[in-house]
Length: 559
Image 1 (cartoon, one colour):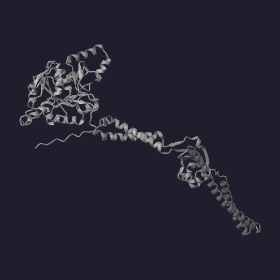
Image 2 (cartoon, rainbow, N blue to C red):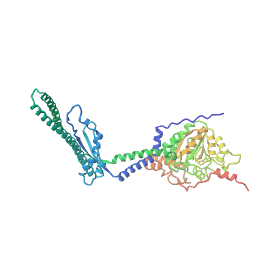
Image 3 (cartoon, rainbow, N blue to C red):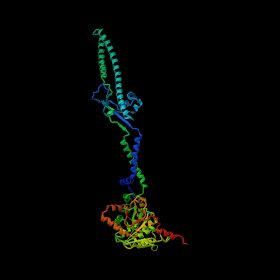
Image 4 (spheres, rainbow, N blue to C red):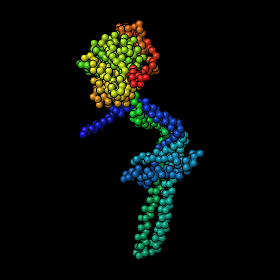
């Protein structure tokens, strides 16, 4: 009984999150722009509110304002003062100074805030017009101070009146006591009692008069305005900068969330970093031409030579069978496969190119470019390319089908060609992403290593991941990838003119550019606008692979 080892837990670090954000930067930027536009729309639709503030110094109403035992600020209660400033009584007084404003509107817009451990209060008023806000703040602060003064005067007046009444009563009693003393002998009991009562009345009168004098000297002003409303800066709500910054921040958060939600559904590989991350291997070569030629342009040929050296470094000795997985989705086997075979053969190492999916139209291009005698009589055989010493091409033959042939693309003849290749040679077997899964698995099983052809904007992460998984299961290592630029528009395969020698023309073009140092020509070649001399474009047509056609013919009933 076999047991399956649990899959390792993959931890997602900060690098992964940054990668997703960079990959979906358009979504993030769009969300930030939406947030900013939403903030601007909010500023345009929501009416502005202006808040004016008057700074006042409240007068603490006490009979002993200079008592060091308790500071003046300790005699004020913040909640009480705030309720007074926002009371209906104060609003009614303020409304008299602000035409067109009702006490309810004044009360709704007024507020007061005391500074901790001080007697400083900030009286504010909010309105939709800056002038109304200033006028309201001034009116509320003046009404607030006026009300505090009136309340103090009323309380002191009541207390003083009570004290005065008590003083008058004691004075009347004092007169009666003095009459008793004057009408009786000095040593009489009545005189003694009246004398004692008179002393008590005098002491009480002294205290009452002292208290009344103290109250009458109390400062009953409510306070003083330190800074008028028009002298302070107006506060605007909503704050433009804060609102836009908040909108941008919310858009950024939303964009990051959307980036992680959308990223699994965006499977196309768009740049070098995504390709390296998807394959886990380096890029062997980056081509400049979106539609490669046979032979390759000077710049692409140089890039393929770099890829060749990296491949040869991994296959130093013995025969190497390398699967070229073409995920460029060009409708046919990419010309890069043959170009890679050309530059590999130039290294004096025997090279065999096997492309079972090559159709008749594409095979005609190969014949003209490399002088390959690919006729029906030679199908299923290895044919040498006369113009490239050391390069051979396998011309696919008909599949036997039924129980004899194991696969339509990687059948007996292909496997025999792989195993009977010249010792020390390199065999490239090319299959596209559209090939049958069984054919890909068979090619992976027969190969010693693999290379992926990718095109930015066309190749998908999912197909690369699936291919890597199958390669790992069959223990076929991946050497790296060759990347083609994004295909813009539609262009057909490039067919070399019969009057030119394509390889020599490409080499001569490369040599001329290097010697003349003409940057303009070099830029044209690198951008793909100019190809090697002696090539021309032919209309593109999707052809049916020879083996599929031959297999269909072989499997059809014979009359």
